[in-house]
Length: 321
Image 1 (spheres, helix red, strand yellow):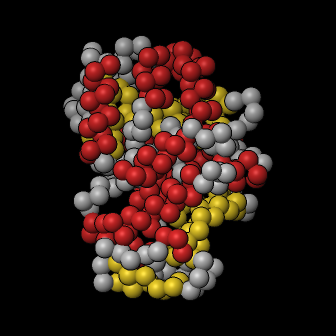
Image 2 (spheres, helix red, strand yellow; image 1 turned 90 degrees about the vertical axis):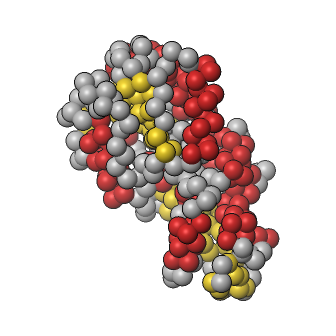
């Protein structure tokens, strides 16, 4: 549960959504990809989650960028081409842009064209001198940069906030980091937010808040199936559950069936036993040295790390060897 719009898909892409629902709900451990959280309703709920007392991630990362913006900017240097994978509210992006010395271009990449267009319009108004080249694409795959000048001599730096890296398992994360390394090239940089391993109860509260906002966010997946795939799922027959898998070092989110039931969507039928769950998200946590080792395996050299005084969250700046 991280940056909104980060790996979401356009609502019009019904074929892929249906294929993933049929495939995921046909497995022994039923699952749905977390990228489907971020339709319009899901994105609104995530904004609400970001402001919750229990959800420390957003405010802690934002505070770190505010506190260390000048240092980050000095490391990145002047005239950089800034590339952001998955643009959310752009609050953290604006803090970074304000600190940077004359960035050459900003390339926001997001799979939701509507969300990306709104974000860029707002940015254009507040940063009229900044050259913005938006790209509609799924950044989990290699993304060609939009302009030959971006692919030229300017230092390229990928900004990947929100601990969205935690949504990938370790193998997927390594593959993604390898793609980033190819994108920025030798001498390029990666500024990335990474959530840290910590007391289990802090993690569980962050993903299962007392007001039930995260529960509504998770259950919106069921409601989205009904809205977009003509489903007849009873959302009230499922409950949200957050679990900490200590062996894997990750938070898991599940939707647990309250009773034995059968639901349908687009002509497909799905049976659930009482207590059976749909696994909807993983959020991997890392000790600082664990993440640095993962990145080093893909050609990145750690330069600086910033950690808050409660050891909740880390921001890493790395460069491509």
